[in-house]
Image (tube, rainbow, N blue to C red; front, side):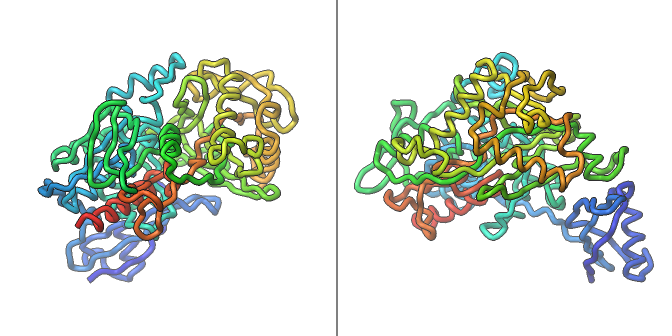
Length: 517
């Protein structure tokens, strides 16, 4: 027999099993001897009151053994002769490959970047010297953008697929079991590379193939179908279908599709800055205390408001994290954030972005479907120029930003390439500047102390999502005009994070399996 109940746990007892068992016994009016196990299946921090607590959803087992919440999948080698080509080894591509293996179909992945270990050298080049490898960076390489940029797993895409299956697969390949119970699960950029390597080995052991340093330079098309790919301007590879899972920064793929007159659509997105506070300040605001209990995690926030007809919101908040250069060419500056599993950096950072649409890029209308993309590129070039052309970030205290004043000094920052005082109120587009300024006062009402001279903004945060959508049929998930082509994940405009991209990868694999069975 088992019963479900909520346990309210002070931080000092969050990992104390004896305390949890005694509490469950009191709640159920039982003797502790009658309880064979207490299993926490969901856990979250509740900081609404003066004294933060953990709320734990638990199953109490009475005279029976608990069932493990971890459910590994039995992956078996593929035996059929069908093969599917996957472009990109980010979350969408990896989980599409794993799902194809379950379906008995051979996946062949082509990744323009390098494996996770070799990729580290190129990340060091960006951080220390400002040198950008256009095929190996924080966006491109094994595991995609998520590998070295935090590993946050929270998603609202619960109706699109089985989130628990995605989390279980990650645990099966080396992630912490805590991601199965935490309300806002997080792996960390120190652990994710090992998980990605284990998934790579799983795919290979089951008969799949993975090819690094393999940029897609053309499509093989005929009779309204995609038949294969051309790799690095030379090798021709044929397949039964193609899953296009390139991520939102593979702009060359959009241009390649357009060259073949394959339909694309412009879509709204959001751009702005990265905002950075001392983590201790965010903890004091969120936990209502000067001294945080060590069992409480580094606190986070999620802020949103409307400024006129635009949404302004925090994005990819990284408690105890650092800001990183996520540029993909040598003449742009793009910022992102990451945290390791401990989240022990003294800084908290988040994207702070304003929604943009066709009104903002009307001067680029001659670029057609790429107008929004050109607007995005312009902001990245402006930030690059303002930072001194070596991935140094233009920055400004937020108190100076709202007063239209240049910051005489800047706070310390986690951003390794360095910062330079810049009048961001002058170089950012007017509508973005206006939205950011107004939102800072609104957010300070929600989090007293958020607006402070200890905080600064760095430019530019531009890659919140793709400015392009690759249209597909809502049922078959196939491109509306090209048979056997399956646009997938963030780069196609159908996901926004590791888990939602992984879910979309599985959905596309299932769609491929349906037509190949």
